[in-house]
Amino acid sequence: MAEAPVSEVRARRKVRVGLVVSDKMEKTVVVQVEDLRAHNLYRKVLRRSRRFQAHDEINECRVGDRVRIMETKPLSRTKRWRVVEIVERAR
Image (tube, rainbow, N blue to C red; front, side, top):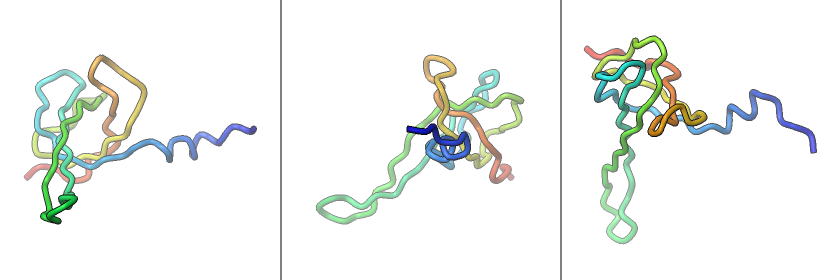
């Protein structure tokens, strides 16, 4: 079995878009990702959210920025994501 090229392997990583809710740590931001889901029985649309700690190497993210994060190898006890790009700056 041949190994897949690096670009295909990276394509399989999970990618999320969320809002930066905290930038108090050094090289780390907390990103809240919201998801809309329909309830299984009642079909009411529910807003679910999760918070991820993401690695921000050059400390450029600020609270309120919309960012794209990508899954990566464990960087610390709680960090398994890294900031790929800032989609939209906070106003």
